[in-house]
Amino acid sequence: MKRGKKYIEAAKLIEAQNLYDVNEAIELVQKTSITKFDSMVEAHIRLGVDSRHADQQVRGAVVLPHGTGRAVRVLVFAKGDKATEAEKAGADFVGAEELVAKIQGENWFEFDVVVATPDMMAVVGRIGKVLGPKGLMPNPKAGTVTADVTKAITDIKAGKIEYRLDKGNIMHLPIGKVSFGTEKLTENFQTLMTAVIKAKPSAAKGTYLKSVTLASTMGPGVKVNPLRVSE
Image (cartoon, rainbow, N blue to C red; front, side, top):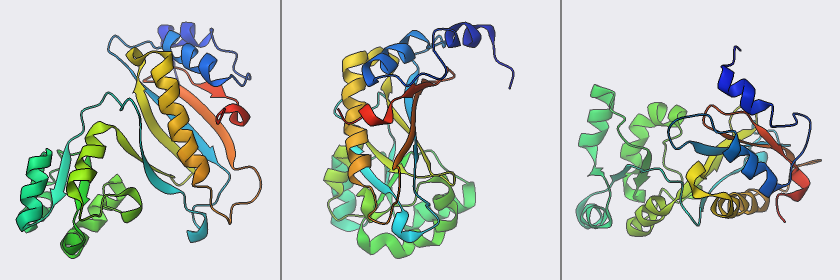
C-alpha cells in the first residue's frame, strides 16, 4: 500500500518492533496523528481464540468513562409504553414494523446502534440478515435486547461500546479522540482492556492477548506490550 508523505514522516517516530507501555503508546498515537480533523483513536486487539467455536466467542459491551467523542444515533424497536420511554430517554428513532419496512425497502441505515425490547425480537429477526453483517443486530450480551430501554439508551449515549471479534479474531474499537489527551485516553483504554480480559472464555488455551495496537485515523499503528495493558 502506497503511503503519503505525512504518514511516512509520522511512522519514523515509532520503532516498528518495539512494544510500548500504554502511556507511551498513547502519547505516540497523538504525536503521529496526521489528519486535519480531530482523529479517532482505535484499539486493534488480536486474541488467541478461535471465534468459529461457540465456546470461544468473546462478545460484550463496556461504558468508557470519557465516552468516544462520537455522536451515536440510536434506533429502538419498541411499542406502547416502551416506545414512549425510549423517546423520552433520547432515542433518535423509535418504531416497530414500519422501521423494518423502511430498512428493507429503502436500504435505510442512518443509525449506529439498534436496541430492542424482548417482545420485538421476532419482528427484528426479519431483518437479521441485513443487520447482522453490519454488526447492528441487537444482542442480550451487549445489553441491546432489554426491557430497560432508558438504561440502554443512556449508556450508549454516554459512551458504551460493544466489543466483538471479526473473522480474524481481532477487535477494532474506538477509545476516544486525539484531543482527549493522554489521561482520558488511557483511562478509556484500560477500562476496555479490563472488560476484554474479564471476558476470556474458559475454553481459550495459550496466550489470550496476542497483540494490541493503537492508531489514530489514517495514522501509523503503535504496538502495546500485551503484558502491561492491565496495569
